[in-house]
Structures are given as C-alpha cells and as structure tokens.
Length: 150
Image 1 (cartoon, rainbow, N blue to C red):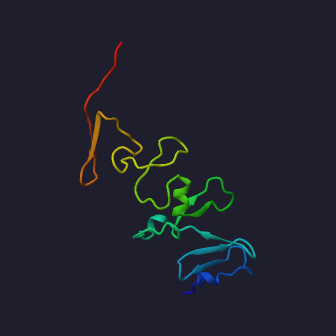
Image 2: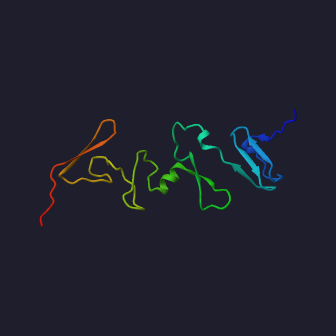
Image 3: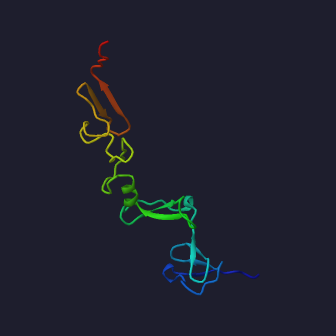
C-alpha cells in the first residue's frame, strides 16, 4: 500500500529557503508541524493545548505562555514569557502569590497583606481579620459599627 511521508527533522534544521507553498515539515525533537507559505516563509501549526503535558514548575524568565493576539494580522498566536505577562498585569516578577489591583492600572498588592493592615483590603481599629491555617477562608470580626447621627 502506498504511503505519504512528511519531511521531518530537528527544529534547528527547518528549511528557510527553496520551500514550496503547502509543503509540510514535522520536527522530531519538538513535535511541531510547520507549513510553508512561500519559498522562504512558513507558519507553525498551533498544538491542541488540552493535549499538552502539564508544567511541574514555572521559570518566569524562560517559560512562555501562548496567547491569541486578536489585534495581530495573519498568525494570531504568539508567545510571551511568564514574567512579561505578569508585568503587563502590574504584578512584580518575583511574586508567586495571588494579587489584585483595586483600580485599573494600579499596582497589584496582596489582598491579605503581610500583617493584616497593608493589603489591598485594609482594616481600621474596630475590625480584625484572621485567616485559617489552610488558607481556605478569612474571618472578619467587627467590634463597633457606628452608623453616625442624623
């Protein structure tokens, strides 16, 4: 029975010239497919994300996230480092905990804070909050509620 075999080899050896539009190249070391669009141009075929392995740990400076850039022309899938993505969200690269900004464009801060008074949510003297040991919930205790006068 006849077979069709796709050109294959290492990613570093992908051709950059003399390609035919529609010619397919499979990388044996990376498991990626690239389709030539012209003699010197090719586009990668984006992998099915749900079929990929899960990353055990993140190296923010070296690891990439894949994004669909809705404003791009042509190939809309692009990469960004984890640290650059965090910077775009105003989260310092060194931070590993969840953070949120209170106002658009504001610097993100810990919701809980480090001592109960310096987080995004701050308490006055009549309030106390405690966090359970498993970090599952926060309890807010209110000492006095003064509704003022009329």
